Length: 58
Image 1 (spheres, helix red, strand yellow):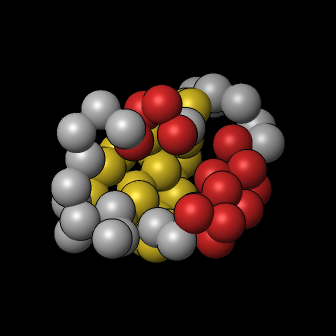
Image 2 (cartoon, rainbow, N blue to C red; image 1 turned 135 degrees about the vertical axis):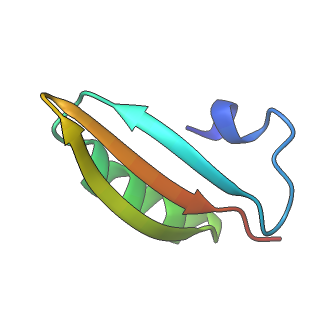
């Protein structure tokens, strides 16, 4: 996830992550807490896909 966010995301930008791993919502929650970003929402997009929205913080 850190690699995905280092691709030019700027503070206050909202990034949508797509994941098929059932553990992804919990993993992203823990990761955002550890790096200081804000987890906005986790939605089931259909089938096995999760849409996870993260706000980039400074």
